[in-house]
Image (cartoon, rainbow, N blue to C red):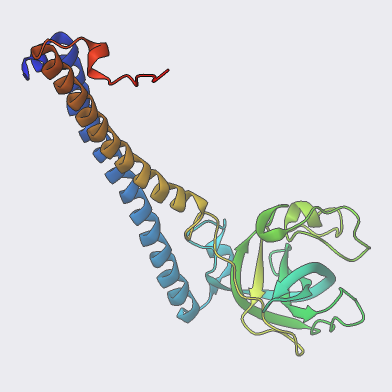
Length: 263
C-alpha cells in the first residue's frame, strides 16, 4: 500500500520536507537568537547607564565624538554662559513644557549647548531664569545632536525668535554666531528651581520594533515547519486512501457517495 512512497513524485516530496523542516527550525532559532541578543544589549545598556551615572565626570573633549559608547556619559566643561534659547514642546513626567538651553563658551573657543533644566507650560523667555555669570564648570550627561523625528523633535520652521526645535549644531548655526560642538549636555542638577532633564538612550539600544519583529519571525518559521509536517501527513493520507480504493477496484468517482434524487 505504501509503495507509492518510492515513486519519483514522492521522492521529491520527501526530499523537500526533509530539507524544509530543518531549514525552518534553523531560521526560527536564528531569529530567536537575534531577539535574545537585543534583550541582552538592552540590559547591558541599562547597566552601563547606571555605571555612567556613578562615574566621575570626564573632560568633554576626551569623550567626543558622541557614539553609543560615550552617549550618556558624564562629562565636564569649563567656560562662560552666553546666548540662551528655549526648546518648546518637550515633555517631562507626562507634562508639557520646554527646555532652557544656554550656550557655554568653553576655553577652546567653541560653544557647548547646555540644557540647564525644564519648566512646565508654554515656552516663555520671561519664565526662564538667567544663567549664572562668570566662569562656571558644568557637569552633565553627554548627548548626540538631535534631528527632526528623533524623540518627537519637530521641524525648525514656524518658531518665534529665541527658540529652537532641535538641539543640534545644524539647527543652532542659523540662530547664534558661535562655533558649536556637535553635541550637547544636560546638567545633573538643574539651575534655579528647574527640573533636571534625564539623559536619553542612544539610538539603536533597547527593545525597539526590530526586536519584536525578530520575535514574530521566530513564531512564523516554527509555524512553517509545523505546516510542512501537516501537509505531508495530509498528502500521505490521501495517497493511502487512493491506493486502498484502487486495491478494492473502485474508480475515483465511486469512492465519493453521490446523493440519489427521489423524484
